[in-house]
Structure formats: structure tokens, C-alpha cells
Image (cartoon, rainbow, N blue to C red):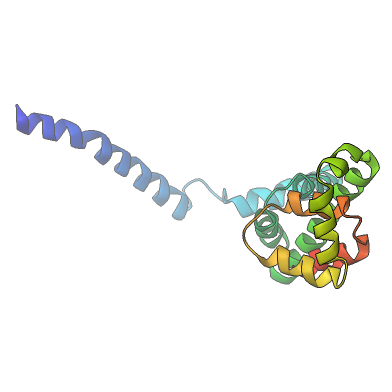
Length: 171
């Protein structure tokens, strides 16, 4: 009847709540030992130092070069290295990723893109050519848009790499 249907509909949510509560308590009270993400990551990096660090650095640079959100890398570095060191390392890795994208675009030539979007590229050049690092910093600070698109546009516009790099670091 209606009452048994109501009871049946409550069984799954209550069971799920009980299982999640038990899982939380078991982790919080240490029933499983030290299995927090922090301990696991520290152990991974300690035991596999020769492989873990180069893979982390290369993966981070590639991640940001392909347009991954800087915030994820900043969080990861802060988690692994602590506040100030993590912030500095994350910033440098993000800057390296931006440079990798720009160098790749410049090396690939992309002449057909330059021809197709000549007017837009000239507009970007005209606006960003003077005080490039300030403009790039401002663009990076705006939480809208893609870092990948910014890096590609900067490379196609032939903006000075050092100015873009330092603007990226500050932004």
C-alpha cells in the first residue's frame, strides 16, 4: 500500500547515508591507518622521487600548455609543497606551460591562421603591443576565458615572449 511504498522509497537514501557516515567515521577515527591523500602523496613522492618529480613537473607544464585551469595546478602545488613554496612553484610551472604553447604555435608557423584572422590579430597587436605585460596580467586575472586561447593569440600576434611570460606570472 501507500505506507509500504513510502518506506521502500526511504530505504535506499537511508542505507546510503548510513554507509557514507560509517565510511566518514572510519577514516576520521583512523580505523584504516594513515590513508589520507596527503600521506599517500607524500609517500608516493618519497618512494619514487626519481620518477615522481620529473613526471609531476612535465605533466604540470603540459597540463597548463593545453589550457588546464591554473587553479587546479595551484591547489596541487600548495597541497604538495605548502603555501608560499607551492604558490611559487605553481606560478613557475604555469608560466612554463604558457611559454610552451606560445613556442609551439610560433614554431608551427600557423600562416593559414594568421591569414584567416589577420584583422583580429592586428587588433590584438595594436592593443597589447604597448605595456604587454600589464595587459597579459590583467587578462590572466579576469576569471573568464581560456588560457590556451590567450597563449595562442599572444603567439600569433608576435608579442614579446618575456613580456607575456612576466605578465602571466603576475596574473
